[in-house]
Length: 160
Ligand code: RB5
Image (cartoon, rainbow, N blue to C red; front, side):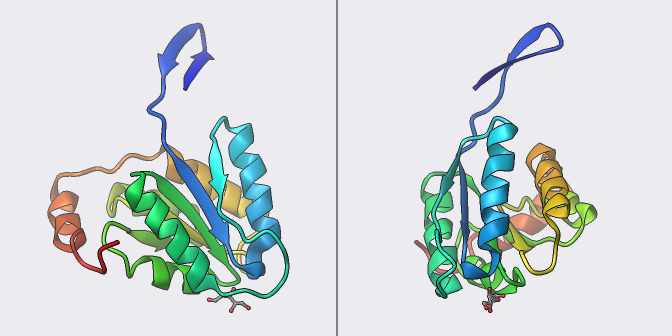
């Protein structure tokens, strides 16, 4: 993706983004898709697409597979955010962080190199999720001593 800002062209690393939810956060998921598009990100919406009751492990698993296979990043939602984060973290290659604050979102990138951010659609407001998502996308992993630690868990979990 090329962008023009403040008189300079620069190229941003294209990051493949995925988003998924269960019925518990449908409205928030749809809101975040629009928000991401407005920020200039393409995002693949893996559902759900209706308010009909469904099973969050199916959506979290679907997103985890895409993130690992396509080396992308993902946004997962459910009512609390807990269910999807538990499921996503079962997969090798996924570091899913349930975030409730901007500091959570920032630190989950700086220290943990999270590649999936999880929100509770019944816990956080749309504005709070927007702010967390923006900082999460903009923040780089610090590496160094943190990498020694993330290397310790990088290979854990079920291989896709
Ligand atoms: C669905 O009602 C709810 O249990 C689910 O969205 C999630 O909060 C589970 O952790």
